[in-house]
Amino acid sequence: MKEKETNQTTTGKPKRRARWRHHVVVTLLAVIIMTLFAIITIKVDYLAPVKRALAGFSFTDVYYQIETEGSDPDTCRYITIVDLTRVTERGQIAKVLRDIEAAHPKVIGMDCVFEGEGEDMEGNNAIVEVAEQYKNIVFAKKLQDWKGDSVGYTKATRSFFADFVDITEGTVNMPRLLYDNMKRKYPLAERYKGKQFPSFIAQISNRYADRDLVKGRTDDININFSPTAFRVLQPEEVKAHPELIEGQIVLFGSVYEEVDMHWTPVGKIAGVELLAYSIQSLVEQKEIHKVSGAAFWIISLLIVLLIEVMQSRYLDKTKHSPNEFVRYVASSPYVMNILTYLFTTVFIGASFVVFSKYHVSFNLAWALSTIAFLGLSRNMYNSLRDYFQSIKDKHKQSKNISL
Image 1 (tube, rainbow, N blue to C red):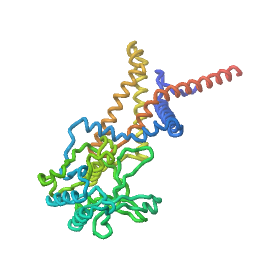
Image 2 (image 1 turned 90 degrees about the vertical axis):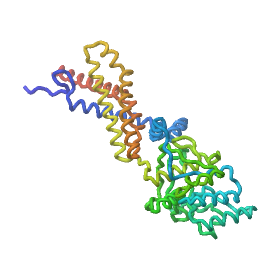
Image 3 (image 1 turned 180 degrees about the vertical axis):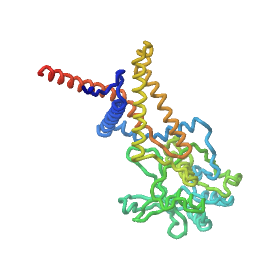
Image 4 (image 1 turned 180 degrees about the horizontal axis):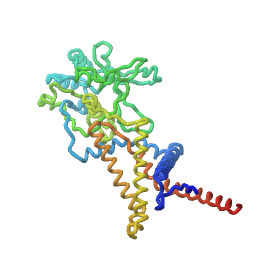
């Protein structure tokens, strides 16, 4: 007589195929539960604060925090910031620009728009003379009035002399998201009246490198915020430190003006410092590349599945142990959660190494959130399995009785 097939071996343990089916189903149940919670968070109005908090978080913030605590920040040796905060008159700005030019910088980024002529004619003339004499200055240009992807912006705020002096300009618009005020990206180009115009950082980086670093890209660069110290000079210190200017990038902008402060993964920093991080990312080709699409989902699912296998094997070993301490204490959810946490730190450490070495960021937040539901999904699976097995057994019993 043919022996009836079961999902267990003669020792009472599940067969390998049944075990893997168990792991896969538990993992998928955890994914479904996580997805339902995500949908609820997005759709329910009173959970909008949670949605805003989640939108402002990226796992790269964790990596930057690890870098910050691990060592002192490196000093950028080719970017110097000259503080514009206390220099308000155009004549004074022109004088500081001449002092900077006397030290022979490679390129100057003027993070200020000289809008309108005003009444300071002497200051206007001084700025115009500087713009006419020195051609290594990139002036800021602010775009407004967005009219869609095909047209782009239709209005521009430019320096008053831009129409009659041959100057180099770069756009200084920053991307703004509905729920995320954290600055992580900077445009390489902006569309203005149907045409693409290079951004401020693209113009400066290309001039410094003497080659096209952008290579036709018009998207946003993912800024690398690995902690960096940028040298800052006050206007009166420029003449005393020509070695910090010669052959380098000089960014002339406000360092301490509150209205020009921005939240970033490394804290609240000045807009000119944000420009410095962006330029450094482009010049050194250290832009952050994020794992997305199919690769992200496959890796995330494999991580969740691996943790599920680890948890299940651990529970099987401890619950069937002859040692009472192991059977009742070590198999408790509290101990298993601690071990799971320690195990997930291995993934965090590995992803941090990849981030530091290759500038590739993998967002572990989704996988870690799903792992939190593995215990619930495992209990659901076991309950459903027992329920259907009981129905199946009752059906067999009734069939045998009828025979």
